[in-house]
Length: 281
Image 1 (cartoon, rainbow, N blue to C red):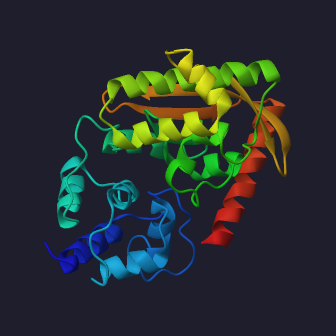
Image 2: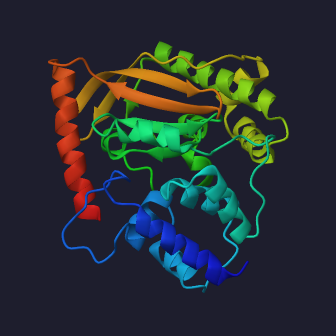
């Protein structure tokens, strides 16, 4: 397969995805029938220049991470995803690797939750997809790369998050993260990327190493989260963690009871976030 065939496939798939279907504002006059290159780049977390070079045949052999990101952004079916891997001269990840494929059925579910902050992570808690409402609430994750996209990494070694915990809540939350990660590592013992991340966490975080060596294993619980938004202030929301067992995905959903102050703040965050997204695109 040549880079030209890869480029043609990307353009064909890009043309069929509307910005509304991808959770983006349609904007004004559009020459593209589907997503613009900059919109695909935004959704996939790669540069516009790289998307252009791939489509024009001036770049070939994208990495597996890029192929997976493009597959999600373009909403490819399972067969189309496999075909894209072949065009990139790669083999799709096998069952021994933490799966990162978001099926069309899960994508359709997310499409119905446009007014709700929703994010999808793999079983190792690496962020795969965040809708605009989630980004408005929790911050823009599009610029994060590698381990920075992993929730465990961010909480132990990364930049501060907008979530606020008491010391007791923080300890319980960190223990839950490690317990979940240990359970995932037992299901995918051959995943080299996962093993490398765990090794770096153990060497760079004394707290993580202590919890890991204690042998905690289990599932992360979610109930309520207090988020400090830079424009709205503190807002406490219900937090539900839904699990797609067949694909080993986590769907994190934030919501507020209608008529409450939290619901009013969430609506305001929606307006502020939408304005920010329009300005960025």
